[in-house]
Length: 326
Image (cartoon, rainbow, N blue to C red):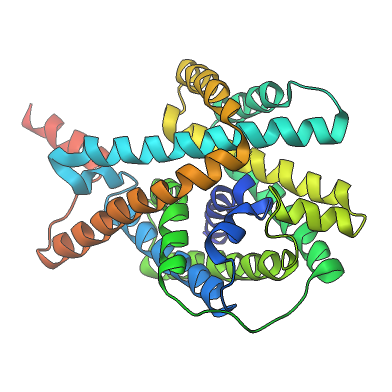
């Protein structure tokens, strides 16, 4: 169970640490001119929502859509649209990153193929890849922080950016981990969410302090890395973050069906021509609204059905009961 907690937390982190985060674009978009307390609160809220989604997964035996009943198609559509938008930004970012590192085009195609192989190999391979890649990302971001970070404690204090940042990020990672928390106890949920929250807060604050003087660039963290002669490290962080998020988004949108993965990836290539910064700046605030709607709905339905003591029968028990009836 200890490994399952860690691997599930790694999947949540992998879904969270995308190109928007690793480039510093998300942090600049939501927390420019804010006090450090605001991004800290954003990370704390992510941990709290992660806990609720883990509980929901445990309660529904890994099938969170059961909470919505007849409205499950609406919730599913919002989640898939949100992940599709994120995926498009990841494809755009992978093209930029691969070109920066190796000076050739086609990085999006290569990354898509690698993600396809990972997904076809199974969810456990997604867990394993995130379990390996996430610590590397943490190490590289820490290196950039200690090299270029600048601590400061001024800025406006407001709750809305923290909540918006949380709801934008939770819609993908929260749903994904809820499908993996079957058999979790409340203790398992608390520990897993704590692992995720601690590392998320550390990463958010590290990036926040590192991009102090580069917030207006397209990729503030990469620009900060260049200023410190660490452009290679910055782009490696970027690519690894892109890959972890692409696998998570593709898994959710395609439901791990190979033909669907191919179709969704092709569509993402088309939308990605809008450009990374345009997609992040224009569409991510919309994702915050969608995330707030769906996440609040999940938590509300969970609390209400728990109060009414409505339980969901695990699939294997349902089959057993039908066999007896026959």
